[in-house]
Image (cartoon, rainbow, N blue to C red; front, side):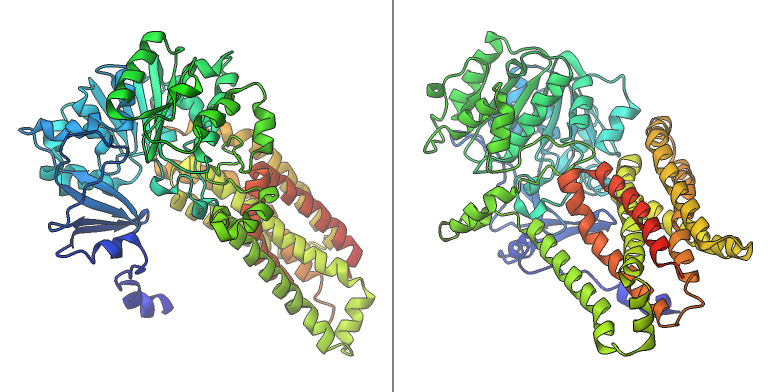
Amino acid sequence: MTICLNLPLLQQPLKVNHFKSFHQVLQLPQAEVVLQLSNPLGLINIVESPIIPFRAAAGLSLQSTAAIPEQLGLFIDANHFTAINQFSENQPNKLAFLADITSALAYQINKKPQQLILGLSGGNSLLQAFYHQAKHIDVIEPNPLLINIFTKKLVNYTGWTYINKYAQLYNQSFRSFFLTYPDKKYDIIQLDFLDGSHIGSNLYSLSENYSYTLEALEQYWQALTPKGVIQFTQSLDLPARSSLKLVNSIKVMLSKQAISTPKNHLLLIRSWKTLTILLSKQPFTSDNITKVIGFCNTRGFDTIYYPGITSKQTNKYNIIHTPTFHQLINQVLSKESQVFTSNYKFNISPTSDQKPFFNHFFKWGSLNEFIKLSKTGGISLVETSYLLQLAILIICIVFSLLLIIIPVILRANHYTIHYLLKNRALAFTDYFLLVGVSFFFIEVAFIQYFILWFNNILLAVTVTTCSFLLFAGAGSLLTNLLINKELSYGRIINTSIIWILLSLLLLWFILPMLFEWLKDSSLLAKSVVAAASISPLALAMGLPFATGLASLHQQPAQLIPWAWSINNSASVTSILLSPIIAIELGYNSLLLIAACCYVAAAYSFHKFKP
């Protein structure tokens, strides 16, 4: 009934925040939305601005004389902007500007390549590959709306009817593509502006990014032909953070591939606004380097690094005070890179699937220095989202403690309070606190694992959350059957927690094998197997809280709502605490902490048990 009454509210149009870039663009004269689509992955708006036209070409040379074609603005979630270029078969020269941007670097090494592009976005990378006469182009795009826009809704504008002779689009995640097609090999794998403006932004330090982890880089590396290259293009960030973290990750990955001299496989250039990294399967030759230097000199790009470069050969066109990027990249690639990484003001350690927070650069040791620089803009270097998460966590902990302690203060003479204090109130509180924290730590960790499984965060949340709630509820019902069979509360608690620990250990080994086995399976098959694999664990996780409540049935009735309050406070706190632990220690550590909390909960139960 409640859902039916609220259906009209759910059908109301979304209201865009006035501070977002989409709303600001609509203030331009005659700017209007020509297309709006949405799905669970986000809201997409296509905007036309005929009076003040879009002229977006990230990384374009300041010396370029090529004209930029007409463009439409594409906004994802009203904030992340990219341009859709108009193209037709009869006007191929309209794409000439795509040869004058830093992401054209890869074509100086490999002509007419077999190419893979990760992310369709507005189609710029696809048009660039087409302009450079790639033999075949595969494009992976997780969001079906972007594919629909490019190939159907705006097909006459994008030129897809002509380009599709040379290209194929895949609607799946980047990581799953390499598992589905392990035999495909490419001369160029291109990752340009993945996450758009997220790169280097302190607002997205809590966002997971599985595209730049060590495991992802290894997948890209294995998909290269012997002469292949991987290209990464990012927005330039000062001070340098994301570029250093990515180069550091590449270096570690190459070391794991038994590459003795990783620095011979890397090349970096920059424009005034973008930075492009080129990773080669084979060491760069002198001929390769000569071509790259010529490319940069004719377009006014700065070389940052290539094998044998000196400081005099960098920072010549888009001049900054010192050749910062060149110096820092050399430090990352040096033998003392671990010391440099440890001492650098930002966190530039490599990321992995267990710690996939690529945009997290915060270091506690740098906080005081940034605050001191607040008058000169240094405070903007602090990752506000991370500190905001900590601030909210502290507020929740304070109010949770108050709500738990206030009844003791206000009703100090009440019989229930005297009874609880007499019977080890701390152990009573600890038990329900630890059970609540453990439950959500495990749930959050499994949601993250299943993001890679389902290639979609919404599906991962839906399947994981529903499975845990359903089977944990069944576990709570099972508690009544076990109590009716006159099993002691302590025995039920001990058995259920041992069951939880064994289930976690078993899933540690089984899930990777299931993931490999199901890589080509349907969504239904993955959902069923995921739910089935979670079920024993979730069933056992439903027992401790229900058993703890049942043990209070012969005690003062006021203890039961108090137990609920403690458990609910733990639930809210753990949801805020879990991403912080994952950022600092990783998701495996989150599971280990949850397991330890369950063991501590069993100990606390035996301390307070009636």
